[in-house]
Image (cartoon, rainbow, N blue to C red; front, side, top):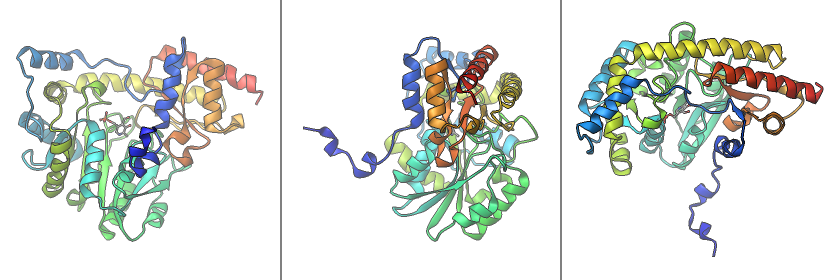
Length: 389
Ligand SMILES: Cc1ncc(COP(=O)(O)O)c(C=O)c1O
């Protein structure tokens, strides 16, 4: 008999991530060039790996405090104060998590009642709407556009509000568009959040990978600290995806709520990863800046090439993703990406994997070598020629 009858209705109706499906195909292919993966191609800097090795050598193999090692929370507190202009008490206002992924899921479960509404901007990272829906709450997308360089349009944000809206999710720089938000835009969003009494959940995982100007966090805007949950992690800036460590900072009562979800579901982030994270915060900046410089060079190259090929592409001010417009092919994003994979063995992700309004675009990650990007662009050029467009 079919065991799927045991599944909950909301799980049955939840689609699997479009990205994973796509990469299951790519992983079977020989000689594919992938611009698909959303993780650094760099290995974690050695001094950070060494901290993990030393932790094991010293026999640090136990559970930690549910909130994470106090030494790590102190370092997080210092780092967030220095880089994001917000002060958090390591004892009560910081939670170490298994990546931003766990922090996002946990915070949703800590704040949402069934039927609550959460606004987020699309195209966006694949987990936002599902983590809202898993709480039997309603996910309300606000479309962003290439004309606005994928920043939120404040009028569209205001128009999306409905009675019962509890929170807004922000992600600047944005996966998959590389969109960023100016201080003026963040101030306008803050005004709206205060007026409507909303909690802001700000995923700032790409903040260090800001190429122009300085990254500003909404938490630094007056009146926002008490209504913002600041999410950050080590995966992108420090090339530590496999360590699975991140954190949430916010007002003590909300972090306490998150603690309940976290302590029963996860218990704690792995101790070895926490020790590596301490090293990343203390001494990781030079390596991080070196990686950022590489991403910047690759960004400039890939954006120039896409525009030369007639795939209009704005220059992302942050993240490691280019988001070219592929409509000149006359195809849908999915058909374009599938066709390119079959014909030329180049993997990019259809924009629709990140929301309906991603139609007409594809995501190309430049967290891969210059040589790979160059080869991928040559193949894309050949593909476009074969389409005779
Ligand atoms: C915007 C965004 N948030 C969160 C995550 C997940 O991060 P972590 O590895 O910290 O769970 C990703 C990963 O791609 C992401 O792009």
